[in-house]
Image (cartoon, helix red, strand yellow):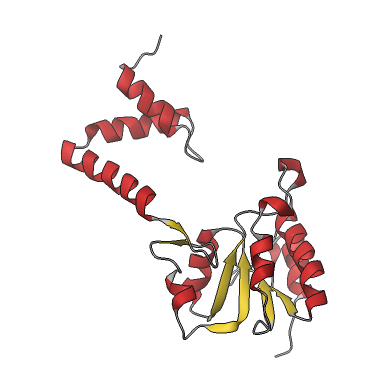
Length: 198
């Protein structure tokens, strides 16, 4: 039998379904949420419902959006000759924050991971290939620098290059401000591989 009243036990159970939230954190969050005023609790619940009702995927790039197409795809000032391929919608936000990229995006919604049963068919690769018309000159692969991201990048490069489109990969290397002695071997190796002339 639960030590908590039924509504609180249900709240804890629902919170544990969130990524990165274990039972202890769910309990702490539950106590916090119960401590909110009724107005604050309704405001939070309303924000969740509104986001769920109003946010969808862009029909072109599959980024989260309130309008279709999204503001990036609809912007005529964007460079339509380059498409940056990322794994998740949050990756678009990260790249946009740099203000260094002015092309279009394509969100795969994951990466190839045979161990998790995720193959190319589960990703938005078919939709990417349909976007690669004559105006596209370059596809920038910005998948994560891990095993799954590298496998996805290699797969995409293999199917895009025969189309005569330039395929590039995000550079990997040392973070700014890092001390060489504390950088792991893989990162150092990638930094050496991707060195450029000054």
